[in-house]
Image 1 (cartoon, each protein chain N blue to C red):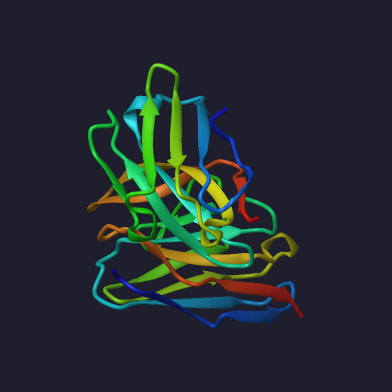
Image 2 (cartoon, one colour):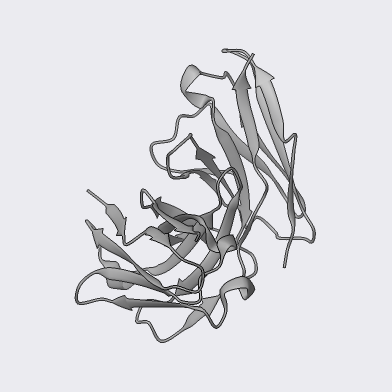
Length: 124
Length: 107
């Protein structure tokens, strides 16, 4: 079964750090770009970070740039998100997402497999 | 960033109704448009990719259309399990951006 399982969320004080992990199974992890997407309570979906197949290229959304770092360990089939200098506005469910390049008339990225999410709460 | 605007933000419908949700992009995105369904407390699920292609395992009552800036998700006959929030997403340009969501509620 194709699966993504996140862990590492929890309650942290403003200015603190957390590292999220996402364990992949059931597919060839090192063949896929991976993303983190977050959803604040009662709000919509927002892209956070993405990484290419071998980890050589990463990109982060402006609100987290310089504070969050995405990485991956293909030997362990695991994706990470290191979150530093956390703020109240980072409070959200964080989803690990596999992106598949759907091949048709053009190649289109689709977020086809999502983890169950892990809740991060930043509060004093 | 490309802005995605969905309408309506919410709607009430009955089982068996035909439901249409629209999504407009702030610039042309070709057919780089995906649709997701999210139920409370659950992760989103991919329904439609490339504007009109049905993801494997998704019921055929779901369909998508459009290109350029205007897109539509249609549920031909609403079922009880379809009550959820639906999001459109563009993957034409990084960052990939989502619409604000359309909540489909029971009438």
